[in-house]
Image (cartoon, rainbow, N blue to C red; front, side, top):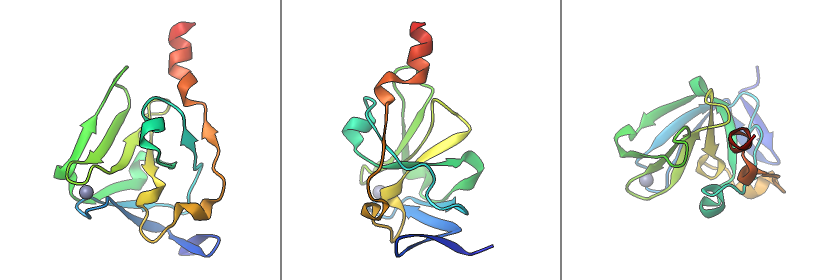
Length: 137
Ligand SMILES: [Zn+2]
């Protein structure tokens, strides 16, 4: 198994660290296949947050430091769990509503990675969320 994958010249370690801006919150992400499914989203929170997100199964994200600094934000159906650092306000990750077995994480928090290296990133149709469609149907 290689110990890293690459995006352009940027190395993504098999276990890559991610951190908030103040450095209080540090996550370890197991990314054997690199940054998977990176995307922007136009749902009500993502359009204001502006972060590029990617996905990992729950067990591939561990909080190394700063769990006490993470603040939980929930809204609407209160299914998704959105976490941000209470010191610097940076969104780090959330447990997804459409698939609670998956965390989405802020690609911009990956240490040493410039999200620009991802190139053009697709935008999910979050405003027409699958759960909302089911509620309407
Ligand atoms: Zn912080």
